View: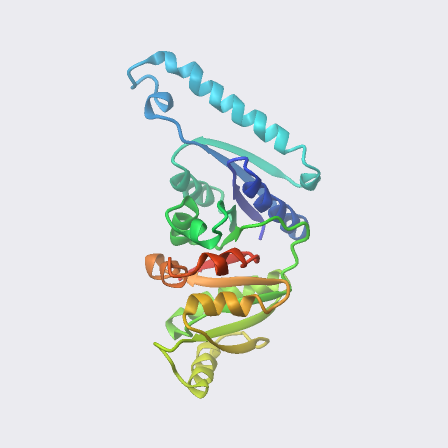
Length: 276
């Protein structure tokens, strides 16, 4: 974890993500790429090709304003002694995040989520959702402020599909990196029920052929996969939820509108996603 990308709109939630990025950067001697996207009308981005060349001073004004906000942000004590690269781009937010992550070969993206509705707001119709669906590197999404990011337990929710072993190994390596205990979680639901013996056999086969040795297996029964993940996670202290995604079939399957707002609002722990 040498290069951490943190998109910011200078909001409180974005700063929550930056604080965690700073803690991880200090622990792993990482650099932070702090980026802000200026989503301006096309005539401001390309004043020569636009209808009014007098718009150029206005676009420069927005750029200077962003740099001023960066300068103010860099005064935060939690960024002291961390190498931070400032990036301001004229781009659509989602496309810009993807471009910067590839350009600088970043290892992880850390983003804040907006809205009181938590995961629902975070994953449905937002830039964060698009990043999670498309990013080839892990995406850590932060909802609340954490003065001390202590993820002692890493809960990886899985259906134990053997074709996705590479994602399992990526998640396990991430858990080792942050020095968290690795939990493999399988949710049994009434509509897709299999016996505990079958689950254990499936998970053991899922893990076989990998270097994963130190983990705890959990089988949790609930009315849905979504509620099962959240309810189980709430029982574990200092937990971080990990899930894999392969586009719309991934997160859209796990975190859909069927999750009640009450459950989502009580999910205080961060979530990290891994692309299948």
